[in-house]
Amino acid sequence: MLQLRGLECRRLRTLTVRQRFPFSKIKIDRSFISGLPQSEESQAIVRAVIGLGRALGMRVTAEGVETAAQLDWIRSGCDEAQGYFLSRPVPADMVPALLEEFSARTSERARLAS
Image (cartoon, rainbow, N blue to C red; front, side, top):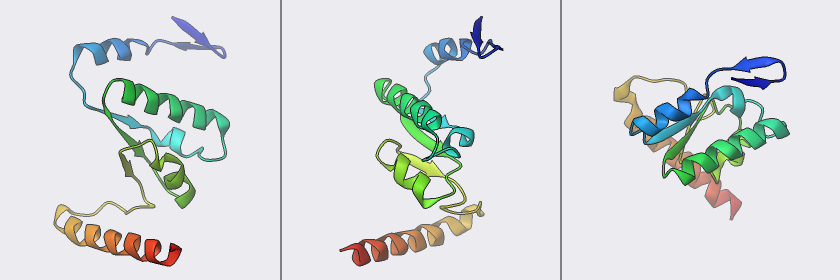
């Protein structure tokens, strides 16, 4: 058992579970993403999780991206992002149109930036 700021931490076994099962992706919980980019503690945790994912050859997804600043911060380390900044949840049949719209917005931003 590990003591962290007066709290007992019994979840270290999750790393043992990682060794036993062939996971291919790590998701960073939105509670850590929400502190970006202001919180140095959130930055340190997200950096560490990204590093762990890279060291294990896993894809890394940031969950709960709600601002452009958060997306900019995780862009260089995460393979995927989810959150309301990108889209609210939509039915599967709407995904192709959503991707087309997102691609058009990205192209327009790149054009304006140059």
